[in-house]
Length: 90
Image (tube, rainbow, N blue to C red; front, side, top):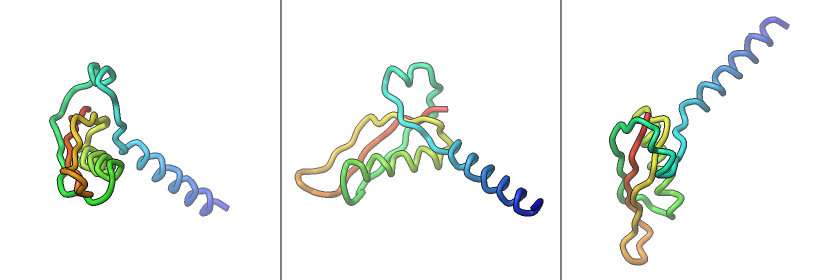
């Protein structure tokens, strides 16, 4: 039973640490109390607005940001290729 408890504890710890690494999206007013780290950008993202924002969130996480605020997303005409920028925060 001890080995099972240790495995369960390790699984819970791993799940908790992954959830704390995820950057959360904030709006402009929420960002006022955060320390800006810089910006991230994406281009040529196939799919939808949601795909582009998910890629921005992923890049924010890779940079070690706790929070991000999307400042621009666009697609030229009826193309499914998206680009965008986000400010990232500690």
